[in-house]
Length: 270
Image (cartoon, rainbow, N blue to C red; front, side, top):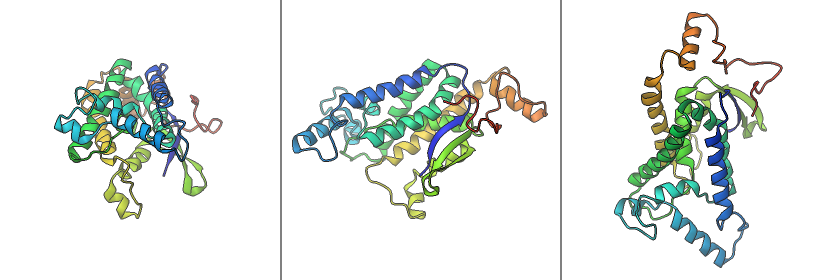
């Protein structure tokens, strides 16, 4: 229901891990049998697609029950599944959110820390879905759980960052709003109960619980590990101190919330 296209939140170094993850997801998808299957694959192609998803996807009943199902140790599907996607829309939607929000989380965490956070967050959200659906036999695939963890961390670290988004029901009118509003709305839209309240039908093919658990995991992790670990010279802490004292923004911590009429998308347009 909302499509983010840019955030005004500069980084201090190139987000090579985020770009690498995007490339890895795209390459895996192109090498699989789904990318060029077409809208109406024949029976043989459909059988190969299903075999691919069941082999590399995470099947909740097998993750918890110990059945190997051709994977070897049952823990590995929780990791392979986060690099497998079921279609172009699934892939491009996930990669858009990773591209917009991943670079700043990587910049704050550090590259190795961020990579481990992404992979472990994706695996844990997969297990969370399995615990909530222990008898499910359909394969769970996609990077949504890992990206949801990134979104949760971003919501904690940069709640006031300005995000430019498109609203389809307003003829794709671009709006700039705080990150907490964008990500908060995304989070509540993952709750089937909220979807029912506003009359939006949820899809049985979407693992909403993996999204919710990943987001909460990322937010709590950032609050406990990154929030407590900030030293007195941390740029975010310096910025918050300067704002509270009314002394302006430190030069090494750009104010990503200010609007520049000559550059509505921000100085660091990506």
